[in-house]
Amino acid sequence: MTITENRPTGTGARWTTAPTSPEGWIDRAREVAAILAEDAVARDRGTDAPHAEVTLLKDSGLATVLGPVEFGGGGQTWETAYRLIREVATADGSIGQLYGYHLLWFWAARLVGTSEQIAAVEQAATENRWFFGGAVNPRDNDVEITDEGDTLVYHGAKTFSTGSRVSDVTVLEGVLAGTDTHVFAIVPSDSEGLTFHDDWDNIGQRRTESGSVTIDHVRTEWSSAAGFVDKVFQPRVYNTLNVPIIQLVFVNFYLGIARGALDSAAEYTRTTTRAWLHSTVDNALDEPYIVDLYGDYTAKLWAAEALADAVAAEQQRLHDDADAVTETQRGEHEVRVAAAKARATEVALEITAGIFEALGARATASSHGFDRFWRNVRTHTLHDPVFYKRREVGRHVLTGELPTPTWYS
Image (cartoon, rainbow, N blue to C red; front, side):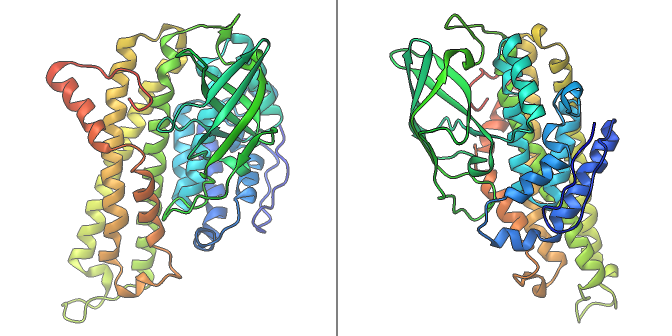
């Protein structure tokens, strides 16, 4: 398998072969992160859509890491994919989010499609190196779908559509008119009637292309309706694993952002931070409160990373035997995902805000960009209230209750 030459940021980076082991892929993600880190501060301030960064993900092989090896993919597991998301996010939280969402939507056919759809989508997506976006915000009104015989027609709008202008294909979701039947389908992002609006203007995750989208009578064939046979959906418990997957995506790019903040802060402390003028030490590295802060934050981050990895390993066992997943297994796993999400949220917010205590006033200069770590975590952790994640865990501990599958549980 050969990966084409890539120079998206002018670094001259080149990959001619693909890794063959999880460790090799993690090293590849670190190489990508090093490239992204070079202009991360400037990119955070900019307004350009991250086309070059998506090209980097494609040309490095990361975009197709879950794809079948026989079609040029990495053939890796979700357990590895989560680590890759985390590594990318250390350098740029926006690109970490884009990458994680892409991997979920790349996997969408596997979650809900028929065996024929899975084979067709994974071959096409891998060979053509599709980058996925998704217009599936459940807080908005449902997109309405009209059944026109062999054709489905999607019509409506969504407030958020992560990946939008940098995606090759977009996952649409809506409800068949007059029913409560939800239908997922993959359509080209340049489909007639699909209009992405450049209106994402938030304090963090600025380069995620998460603006609104208008879906004006976008047409696709019934054959592309994921999981439907003769217009009837074929359900299984594995269909509902989309929420545990995306929540672990969140966990890992939160932790990646926190790791990026802590590593960047430590380098600044080693090279620039001064001891306080009234302290009894000459070097900031000997300041007891600074040493304590890095010890405290590192211990908390290590613990959160270990929990995330353990929950990812649990999930991988469900992926490995998808047809056998039971409602109880799914529910118990979602409780563990909720716990990891709650812990990652709290640790990432604490670290990204608290690093300034070890840096000093000069570190607040905009040129350093240390604020981007907190802004990124603060923005996305509002996706769904962490209180409800803790509640899932607490109710299970006290009453044995398992979360009912919804868009958020």
